[in-house]
Image 1 (spheres, rainbow, N blue to C red):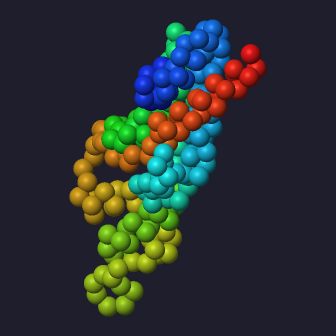
Image 2: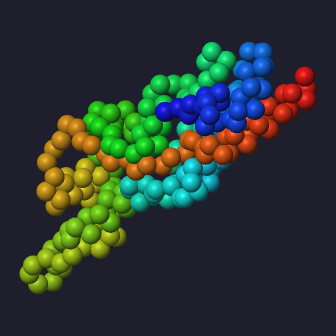
Image 3: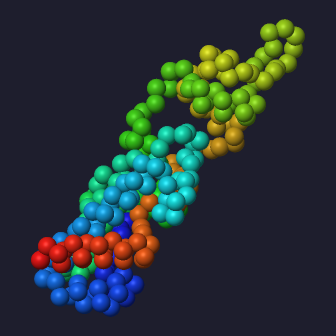
Amino acid sequence: MSLIITPNSKQALSAKQQLQLLALPSTKRIRLLKTLGRYERKLARQRIRTQTTVDGKKFAGRSDGKKTKVLKRMGKTLEPYVKASKRLELKHKSPLVGKVAALHQEGGSERMTASRMVRIHGKPNYKAPCTRSQAKALAAEGYKVRRAKGKGYRRATIKEIAGSLTHGKATLVLSKLRGQKSRKSWQIPVKARPFLGDTTANVQRELATILNQLNKRG
């Protein structure tokens, strides 16, 4: 995902400003666009810190319900590139990071596999106690235990589940309760969180400011 700005288009600069820009030597045009790129990168990083989109709205929350911030590293690898001294591209150094950023920028779905999960999170210790999130999920699905007195079963508490099931057992039981079959791959929905971009008016104001500064310096 990249932000592309061509400042000699009518959408970016006024006619007078276009003429001023065209009169600049290529080295100064490159400097101007690099400065603009660093300005836009600053805005993108600020949005990630505040977890807000280009239009000022809060980022969509995580699908797992966790409150931790998203896209925390997406702003670190953004770099401004100038093509033919007239086109600015603000994009990620790594194509893979750019692909992930584009997915979050526009929304969509990501294919996940069991082997990739292991690469990302490591191989689970199935003999370890089940996690609290697993216990909560099992309780929500109506997991039951045998009654201490009398016949039949009753719904288990989160504490009981966490203290009696291993990670592997909880994973297996939860899959059965949810009617899930073993899968080699699956799609994970990703909500749109547009952090890269700007309005035409803001780009024009910043370009005009930088252009004036360059003209004063001579």
